[in-house]
Length: 203
Image 1: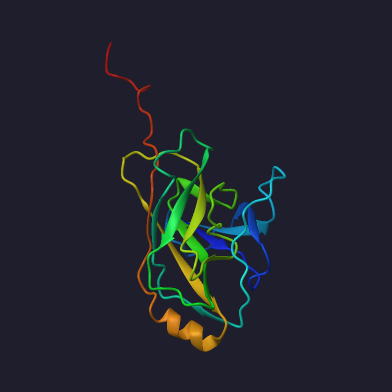
Image 2: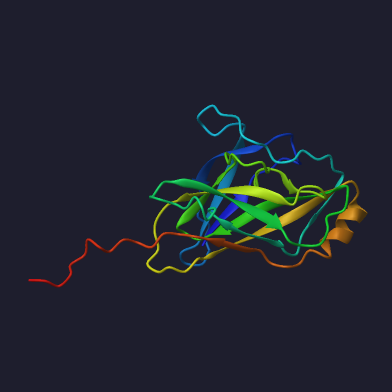
């Protein structure tokens, strides 16, 4: 698994993800890598990206779970080659989010075959990384992934993660956090490696 920590300054306006750097940590499980994500205002090609939601806040609380669901990439636009980048919609499926509360994803645990690209998704929803992604009125965000390698089997691995609430008051955050304990159910459709070029056993 690959762990991506979303860098954030207390909801500084319109933060966006621009690049990734690996920072393996001692003590991680074999095959797991910790990756920090920096923020920027475009996708590297000079194009402005849809930002996460800008919310004023005076309180915050880590959520015991991340009750979201979805699939990346979208079924009608799958990965087609190593290095391709695709997006998918992630939906908040937890308790109703009260007015004055925003939810920010702060860490994503992805399979080793993909990395988080951050913003840059052309959809109508805010980015899932770099700031608040869910509010009382917004219950969907866009998550971008880059395909780094294929899999030997056709299973669809899952993405895990953690989140925090930012709120108008600390009391509001504490009340909301106590109700959002379910884990995420995000699947990733990763292509199976092509073994057609292997030896077929003929002489």
